[in-house]
Length: 330
Image 1 (tube, rainbow, N blue to C red):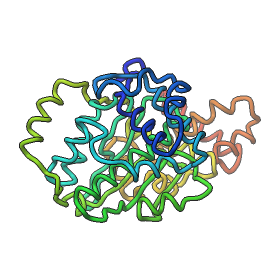
Image 2: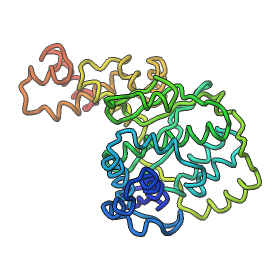
Image 3: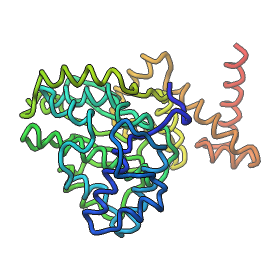
């Protein structure tokens, strides 16, 4: 499992943003100096820098351009081949699903700061998620936008089909204007302030053949990929995501099953099924979230604590605390 001290990015990630800055008429060398990116024009995917360089480049690119949609805009304008091995593995795959599978397996060739993984698979859809080992910041938000835009853009170009996700979710707050997101992704099913950064694609689209497929090249590339850093694994489980969703729901009011299911982009029935598969229950997880919240409210009166935890009155909170203690003693 990766830790922050293990994390690094290929220079290709920072170079992509800096070349886009130059293309937009900005002083890319100045931005590189401000971000502290050493010799950004030199080296290949094996040259590694710390994650802060790439994140700072994205933040400066947005500031210098004055464009809050800069990550989406430049991703649309990019050309294939800028991300080395990972991109060629993507383009040489036989179907869009196989191309994305290559990304989930070999992200480490480009970065060990992020993980691109399958979060959920159903008969009709697959939900992909970007996990990061870096702190939340504007640079991370822009980089995730870029990642999703590139995946769709490259997929559409390689299949020559208008692939449209059934759902997109971002952890970042909602922008003042969503029109650029709707235009790029081709859907209004885009949510912000979610517990995870995800893009959901239909299995029918994942079966689309890639016009750039090259099985012989794939074989050669996979041999080379085995010599590069492995794809990272971060310790974020589904129950961790559920806990985050419960915490967020309790901030806004009662944490109902339906409200939390919406945050997790699933149905109440599917949520109940996953709880059972994990050996827990809805009530137990709500109790855990409320106990976490109670530890933050020890300075409040009992009545204020009850309100803070979403209970109708102090008596309801007192019964809940007694129930927790009995469970702990059992």
